[in-house]
Length: 488
Image (spheres, rainbow, N blue to C red):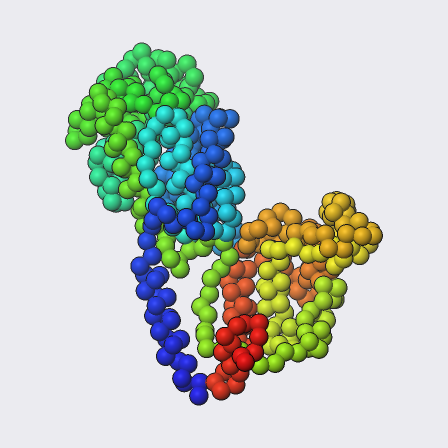
């Protein structure tokens, strides 16, 4: 009888596969799930740039450095772990790329819904507008990468010492033509560069640099030392989006070698055009930013936004009975010790690793005061004193039984591994949470606290196992017309 459910399941898998393969970017992607996303992010970016105008350049550059490495997938935001070589420490990014914390702050728009990759893409557009640059429509729906690629960051990000053909080839590799390259380079109308990146040029006495300009730049960049001294890429209007960058190139006043070479060979005419027509530059910059933002986006079931996803087998039937007694005895208590918890999960065919992974669902949600009161007033050695004190404010020793507190004080509405980090710091809210960081399961908690990817993968695996505990199939059970009642 089970075979009668195979065709619908296969059909659903086919449908889901089609949806996944046809996933695409859209300007209204979050209209239903997070309609205020763009406004929240825009306001956050405006505040950041109002506090530090230079941040506009940093955010545009951050987006550029993300898109040039395995597409616009926010891989540049991933920190170093035992399994990830972070792009943050790649040569073009280390001690140079900025703005990570600004993206994290803007990410507060619907946590777990809006991807970091989309936040970064919107932030670049909003940064341009905030300093007088053009705006453009941003298609959304990117997913976040689960990996980084430091090696590609080291090879594919253009160098400030590159010649013209090397730059053209680097952009062509990403589907961007020479005009896109020159327009995007115009982002150097904003921002600053470190002395060691332009020292060779200003002391070269070359014919492609204005002598007075070189002399001015040498004052802040000695021949030895001062490697990290900063100089504006556009000496005229360093904090405004305009076409003075191109006027500088025509006058041989480009700070970086990779800037000045644009006013040579096949791209010289584009530089000349932009230097005389700011509107053309602004329009082409917007067009090129759109093209760049759509380099190999991670879509559909690829990548992540919040918690993990997994394949769900379907075909279950609904029970015609309930068992209050079993609910009272088999559901784990928030006061349970470790062995009691292990035995409860083992009874359902779930091992200790499954139990710890599933407990990670407490990265979300809240608990009532009466369930954790005893723990926060125990003065036990297994609870951080400061954490206990904080929790007592909302949970008095008498009364307030139904007062709520987040199970994860750090990121209560985001699926991440902070729950496990809390346990390592003795900041588990429930006794049944904190005991996981003892005995045979302590090493699993430690592993999950360090590696969110491992936790996410194990959580998905455990959820699949749990969802297949004694399913009602075939002629057993019914399909209820109303989920809360037996069919009449």
